[in-house]
Length: 130
Length: 115
Image (cartoon, rainbow over the protein chains, first blue to last red):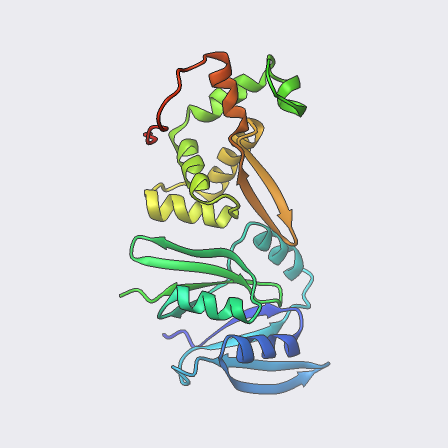
């Protein structure tokens, strides 16, 4: 068994497409209309184009909002992406106007930071475990 | 009584001191204060991360929330909403109660905390 696809709910798919590609730097893998304006919209890392896809899923279900609001209030990220250098990525993203709820924090061998994806989620970046 | 204002002044002789000493009596709560001293303004998630990763304290998020509630009751932690997030700030002002009640001679520098 392999992890092929995982998802985050997004408030607005067009906005999410912009943020996840133009700002974060992922590339679009699939973009298929599935009716009522919704799209099967996935992105992958350019470093791993055949790797796991992230589905940017419409947040229409009524359970999504209270779930995400509660997690966001407590600063809990919904996904984690690996980067080579958290501090460099933090500076790059801040330069693009991204808001961080947790600045880079070194904890033993791991450094993490948490930012707002502007689509209703907090995302953690972390140095790759060696 | 000196320059105390607001709720601390009013509550000086009341139950606030009990809340303060209760809050300080627990090593985990003192560690939370240490981490907030390093950086004020942390989400619950960040506080939990620091406790587990830096201090190897295996406490649930609910447990940390309860510790924060005790610290908040003592006035040592204040919460601040900023947009959709909630941050915890350190407020050391209530600690003045201790040295005003039991004055200490001037010390060259504060001692490193030990839990």
